[in-house]
Length: 247
Ligand code: MG
Ligand code: MG
Image (cartoon, rainbow, N blue to C red; front, side, top):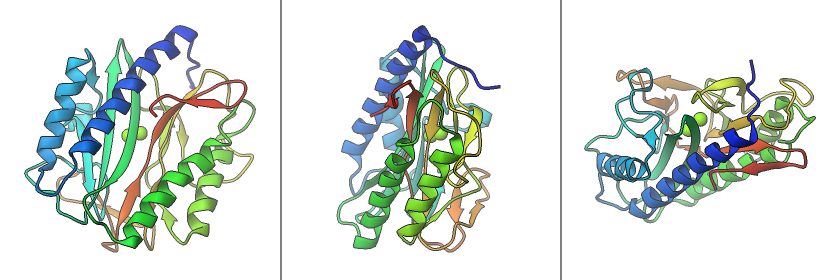
């Protein structure tokens, strides 16, 4: 069942959205060679708690941290650790926060120091693919309109979309219906209605879409060992287009 948000719900979701946006901006400013992923996680957690919010991911199915931090060939769900970020790494940071019972969820891929041209193009196309999909996020369209626009843009630029994980509805739960895949067909999928809240999140690989999960049972990596990038925002469907609440 897809939950339609009331005006009050949306006001609260926007509060959560602002906190997630500001946390990601803070973390982005701290991504530098020599910093551990655990340090970034600690700073994010402190910031979210200081805002009177709760990190959405910590404890979710047992996830042990506030942020998912996924470096280079890691796609999503990387666990913060003593790992030190190096010059040339690309660092995907996924963050969720809950305030007054509502979640927002967003992700960015940050460059650390000087990254390769290939890495920088991957980050750019991943981010742009979100906005290609977002164009179709309006009342009367279907989820497949968003999905197919993302897929088409990514593939026409020579990359592949991860299919094993998807975007999602969001609200009182971190993950709600409907699923928002990064692949699909125009005109198919759930009908978009005013008041729906969605997390749209392209995960884009160099080479094939295939992934595997590491022995920690969380970290998703590319099967070919090549780079992957992630970009996500929470959006609210309105009558005339839509609103991004985590930007
Ligand atoms: Mg996320
Ligand atoms: Mg998400």
